[in-house]
Amino acid sequence: MNIEELKKELIEYSQEIGIQKIGFTTTDTFDTLKQRLIVQQSLKFQSGFEKGSIEERTTPTQLMPKAQSIISIALAYPSRMKDAPKSRKGERRGIFARASWGKDYHDVLREKLNLLGEFLQEKMDGVAYKAMVDTGELSDRAVAERAGVGFVGKNCNLITEEYGSWVYLGELITNIPFEPDEPLEEGCGDCNKCVDACPTGAIVQGGQLNAQRCVAYQTLTKGFLPDEFREKLGNRIYGCDTCQIVCPKNKGVDYHLHPEMEPDPELAKPKLIPLLKISNREFKEKFGYMSGSWRGKKPIQRNAIVALAHYKEETAIETLEELMHKDPRPVIRGTAAWAIGKIGRHDARDMIEKAKAKEQDEDVLFEMDKGLEFLTERV
Image 1 (cartoon, rainbow, N blue to C red):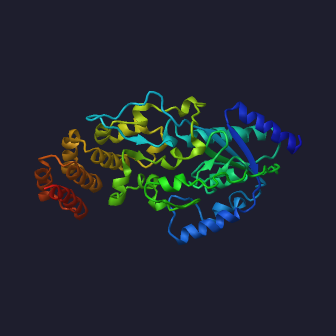
Image 2: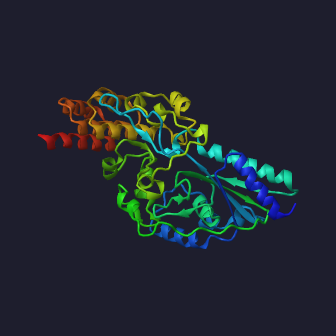
Image 3: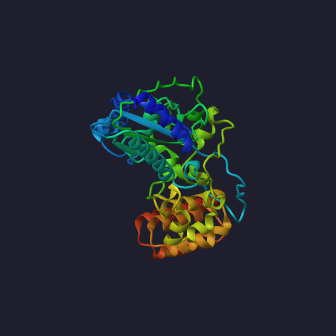
């Protein structure tokens, strides 16, 4: 079978197995990305979650020496939740970012990519491939952009014509020399809505992100959340969708094409107080299938405490007091004390001072003082 015919058959097969978009590109070095990464590194704008060296992240043949092309795929995910529960006084809820709704997308996309790889091996002898989704060395967005799947917008997300930026991306490096597709033109124009709307100014300028300031990144950290980000967190407990929500390319875009990507409303928008009491086992059983669980329950619980403080939810006080006294994790004890002060119930000072009298961790004591400061300011 000739390569041109194989490409055509692969595109048809990709549609049969539920892939929304597919594109092909070369294994040439990603020179523009390489320069951008060097700048990002010098400015300390990287998140620290990136895999591999800059060379590995921009040179596909370092990952697969005999690679001759890369296949990029995109799967559309929902942007709206059916029957979303309301967050009410006494039953406040947090929110997971849309990319974490439903089954972990890493598993979904790897399954699709492996099906593509197996299809190629059935059609041609000697086919080798390497599948990657998000946690691989290559930049999914850079590959998808060069493969003509979409363009990278000012918010640093890949934007497709049909599905906006509500797409998961993955790629297959292969030793088959497929004809590359043409990249699309950048389509943001003069629009600057995402830059203006970013809660923390993490989008430094169109196309440049300071990952350290991104709310999505901050929801993943395991230490004490810096004060400036606590004010910006709102009820987010994992990720942030602001720069996508305000994007005009996403207006009215909402696709429900994959049942496994549909959110369980009670998990994608969970009640905050029960989250603080959940055991490790229960957390894994309930949330383990979602991509938002990968950092464990500690960051999510910390974020839930901050969200309760944001709501000034007085019904959470008893739970927060118990955490402040008994939780073995300093981050949780300290954040709970800070939240009690922020909520500011009439008996908050006594609560914090009692806990402070027996607390020995300096970081927790510092948070307790912050909580007491809120109460002093109100007097």
